Length: 183
Image 1 (tube, rainbow, N blue to C red):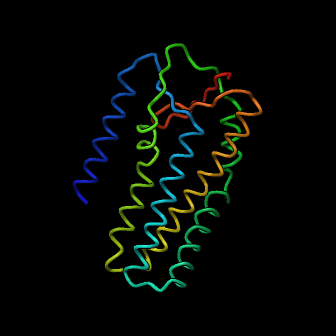
Image 2: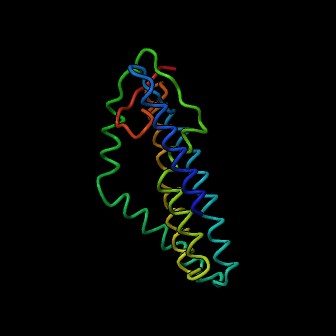
């Protein structure tokens, strides 16, 4: 586990270095494909976590209930606030893609999107399997909830792209800047 965490940290550091080494030319990620990729990864890992919890001894019924509870808790936490309104405002104020901008490879965008939430929850699921497999099922549900939120975000992005006849791009590295490029 320690080596995996170190590798993830090194990948995140390398990615952050790549972004800062290009002064004046932002590195952008395609928002909708990134959301779909991270949603797929989260849902696959959540299903694997649920299966592992069942294999570790949690009965199917209680495991499913814990999994569903985790997903519902996460979805309520995300949509209980004003996140959706803030996202609409953020993506509604998209500017034109700056000259010289580079598109980040999707594999790198996936790693960036997975760190720290997806990777962290996956590690916690694995760590909880032996002493508390029920907790693993609950954590897998949280991860599934994150996947569901990512799917919903990808659907909203697809609708915005159709409405604007443009591809939506976000600045890599967690910056809040959003851009659009006409089709």
